[in-house]
Image 1 (tube, rainbow, N blue to C red):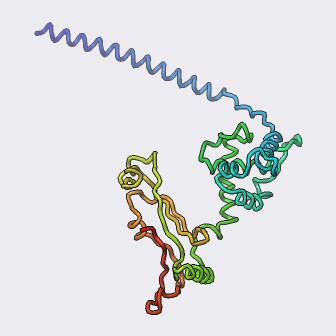
Image 2: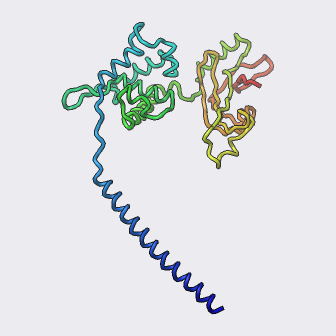
Length: 283
């Protein structure tokens, strides 16, 4: 029995010595690797700027899409690549050109920098495809961080220029009268427009949110809801994206709030005066 105890103690002692030696070795190795990383971090030179031909990038963009009938890609290609018709692009272009950062700059040697049209194309293409910022770097000669800054400033400028007209708002009294009259001619008096919602699959839904975003839509996948209200002219008065997919159309419509002040809509018939707005819904 004493021999067994002594052998166990010897084995434990040997293990402790080996463990201590290994621990000391790992400590030395970790400290040396950390010091090497610090040396590399300190001595690492700054990445040199790539030589970009901004004039060539501008010529390429113009010849592809903005050279009239001589453009390489037609209107169908333009709308598919930019996810919007040219008229929308031109309207944004006319509002933003000449506003920083959509100005023409030159470097200290007098060479032109990135052309404003190329900057705008980069912003539209990124928003259209939702891809990485360096997706079109080889074609547009716009670096990743540079395009990120352009997109942020582009979004702010668009909100300032078009927010009062296109962001969610209720129609005023005069607009409601026009809509009501035109909808009355279509046998829908007092109807402001059509309401609908659509479920979009959320592939990368976090696990902690899976329960509230899983429903019967899209085969039981996790989804997000896009809802919108538009009138007969396809003018969108309200849009909202992000409600949980566990809600169906009826439950979302029940929770829907679209404030309209001083509502005075014509009655559906002569015996039914009312002060609320009607919407067409696909139920």
